[in-house]
Length: 467
Image (cartoon, rainbow, N blue to C red; front, side, top):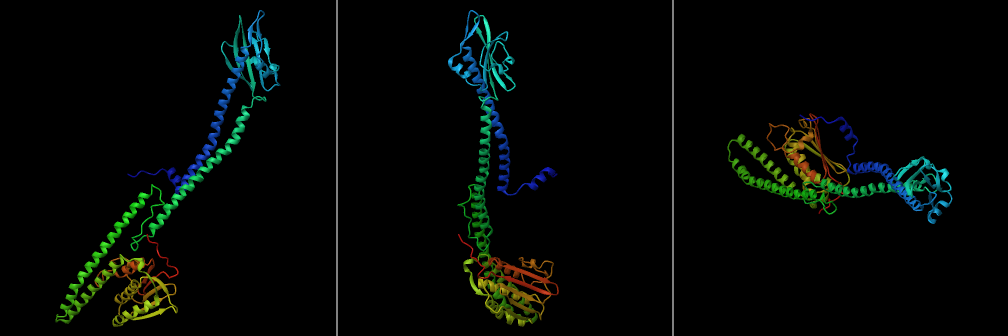
């Protein structure tokens, strides 16, 4: 039982781009947005944590220095500050202050601005303690001086001039954030450029592969500019082309050999059937031999087409080709009771291709129009200035709903008839594929058939590059 696709996944895939570059860029832009928000927040948190640690270490260091200046006296503890510490607190108030207080909360010593500091909110325990009071942070350090215990309380006003850590953090983030975003935005540009270069190489190989057909199987995909991940696919494709080319050649050679081997017994059969005395039987046998000869000729033509190469192309006048082809088949057509006419452009119509194959295609259309229509059919050949050769008749038309199906091998509208193998239009289609042209079949019952061959004009034809 098939598993139902979730509705959310269906909507997601509907808006999810199919392009690899677009997907990578979309993912990277999402990652950039997350990183641009998360990294500054994390960095700010790290900086503030480190700043608080540094601040605590500084306050503890100053408290230890002040504690080292306390001595026991006869009247109680005496505070004699080291000149370095005294100089720090003798300067104008910058947010730093200290107080040395006893257990009763009396001030034994302090900085000039001690009254501005909420030092009384500091804990006075037997162990060093950190505290916070409004915008102030501080350290309370117990000190034993003889029989007395006093506390050194050092504070820092974070809004004061000396508290520059927050300003440093904010300034750093203001400078860091644009640099971070710029670097992050540069990464997808670099990645997209690298990916685009690889994609262009793959696209070029795809276009090269699309131009390979049965007429140019000797072409190979270039592996030099492809990424290492795609190169094995190109190598496998080239190996497949080698096998296909060999198969086509073997097939063509086999068909040609079979057709050649059939010609000898057919020639003997033609000679022997003349000895048949009954004229009706002899005519029927001669007609059967003619049909068999026609099929053998078509097989040979088809075998030749499978290995034809573009280096045998030339420039020729489609008007002259039509004149010569009509002149060659006119006696046969007139004998069958049909009429044939030529309507050609006044100026030469120069096309590029294999003249023999083009003549074969036109001859197939003319003979088909005569063979598959009743006597008295009017056949007209038109040569247009745009390289189109058109053969039309006023016969009964092609049976079936899709006239284009008549170009498939072994197709026959009337399976009761045995006057062909269904290869005529298939050969014509193959010839047009070799020329990279176009075959169009139009037909309506009772209105006749029109078949057009569009060959590339000399100015439009570009030789395919060969490896």
